[in-house]
Length: 298
Image 1 (cartoon, helix red, strand yellow):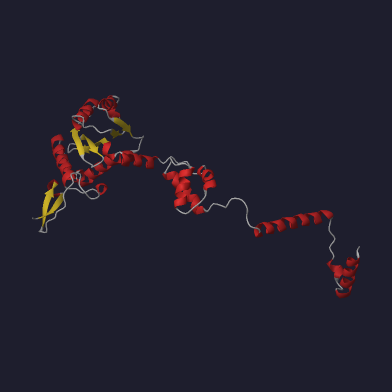
Image 2 (spheres, rainbow, N blue to C red):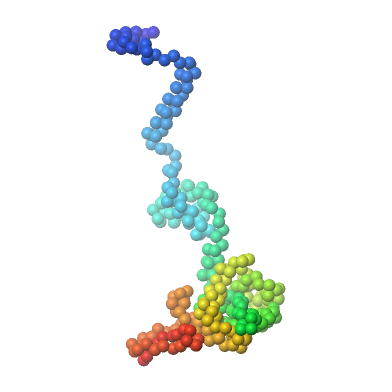
């Protein structure tokens, strides 16, 4: 024991009479365990107090933004995403590739399909069937072809017994004199068989079949069917083919000339001219009074 230790215990005995009661006998293993625990606490405190080294931790905002950019732009690589982040005031060049690998790989067919439709709407048409019950509890099949760009009905017809040969004839009437679009969207209806796709290819048209049970992929045609039902077919009873064809002919005319469309920025397929007159408002009945058109008198 050194001189300093001796002096310490002399003063401890003189000024702290109960020092013996504070002594604790421990095993050497306990002392080692205490030392290791103190070592961990010490360096944990030092690590928190010191300036962090290494790469700066990526914020949740930048991380979610990388995920969003990858999801919305599947063809972009790390340099392109880094450039976009720089434009937004972020700089995380070395970590982009690492976080791109962690993006949930959802193929998102909906987004890719919408991009395809938006980029090719001038060259896309769609065809579809819908059924209408008759007063005698029969079923009539309505076939139509609609253009995507202006929502125009290029052709429609009605039959009791749709066959592949009948459908092929309707396509020839819908696209006369080389007026065929580049793409024609249709579902996987068994009525088409193998003859209809072959006929579509013979017209120099690329047939685009929708996925199974995916009516949203033919959304323009499906929306027209829904509008036709809500605005006409839900309010009438078809007597026969001739009666239904007259009703649909009037509805198609109303659809083209009078009805405004949200997808066309509140315009009509035939580009109805906005009235510039200031006279009184005149009402024109359409579809037997189910709908009306309003103009101003000159």
